[in-house]
Image 1 (cartoon, rainbow, N blue to C red):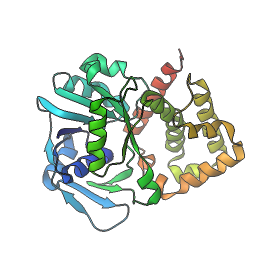
Image 2: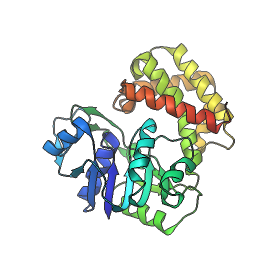
Image 3: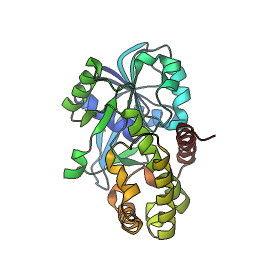
Image 4: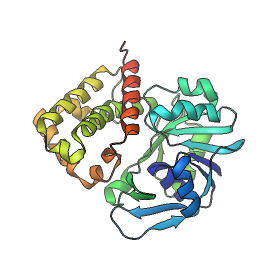
Amino acid sequence: MKLLVYGAGVCGSLFAARMHEAGHDVSLLARGERLAALRRHGVQLAEEDGPAVERVPVRVVDHPESRYDLVTVFVRTHQVDAVLESLAGVQGDVLFLLNWAAGPEALGAVIGHERVLLGFPTTGGTMDGDVVRYRRSNFLTRRVVMPIGEPDGRTTPRLERITETFRVAGINAKAEPRMGTWLRTHAAFEVPLGQAVYEAGGPIALADDPDAVRGMLHLMRRNLAAMETPPVPRAFDALRTLPQGLLVAVLRRFLRSPTAVHSGLNDASPATAAELKRLAEQLGASAGAP
C-alpha cells in the first residue's frame, strides 16, 4: 500500500512506524522543527519511561504527492481546514483519525464525499523532545480497537481491505458502522475531560480536586443527554446511570493512572486549548446549540 500519514505527532508517528515495519510504502508528512528532527533521526520511539530508543527510517515529506492508495490524517481538530485544502487535488481515499464531532459533510465538501472515511486512533503517548514515548502494551491495551468506518455505516470492500491491512500490520482495527455517533460520544466525554485537566494543570492535579471532577462529570452527563442518538460505545451510558459518588471515585483513579499520565492529557500547549475550543464548538452545533 502506498500510504501518506499526514501529521507527525504521537499517533501519526507511531502509526507510520508500524506500517513501515509491516512493509508498506509509507510517507510521513511533517512541518517545521518536527520535519527537521525526523529528517535527522527518523521516527524515534521509546516505551513510556524506558531507556531504549528505537529509530525507524520512515520517509519524511513536507508536501503530498499527487496520488496515494490511502491518506491517513492525524492532526488536531482546528488544523483540519488547512489539511483539506492541501489534499483537495491529491488522489486517493482519506481516513480521518482524529477528534471530530462535525460529521463527514464538511470534510467531503472540500475533497469529495466519496473519498472520506472516519476513525479514531487508540494509541497513546507523549512527546519527549523528538522521542515519542508510547503507552506500555498490556492485556487491556491490546484489546482496545481502532474504530474506522464509512460515513453512511456501510461495510464496503475498501473498508474491509483497509481494516485487514491494518490488522496484518499489528494494528487492532475494527469496522464501526456508527462512526459518526462514536466520534460525537467521544467528544461529549473528551471536551469536559480535556478542559478540566487543562484548567487544573494536569490529570493528577485534577484528581486531587473532587469538586472539579464532579463539575466535569456534570458536563459529560449534559453532553450525553443532548445527543439525539444513544452513545457509542454503549458503555458510555454508565456516565448517565451510575451513582455520582462511584463515578467520581472511578474518574479520580483514572486520572492518577499511568494511562492518563502518559497521554495527551498532560499536554498543556496552546494547541490543546485551540483543539478543545473547536471540538466544543462542533459538539454544540451537532446538539443543535445556537
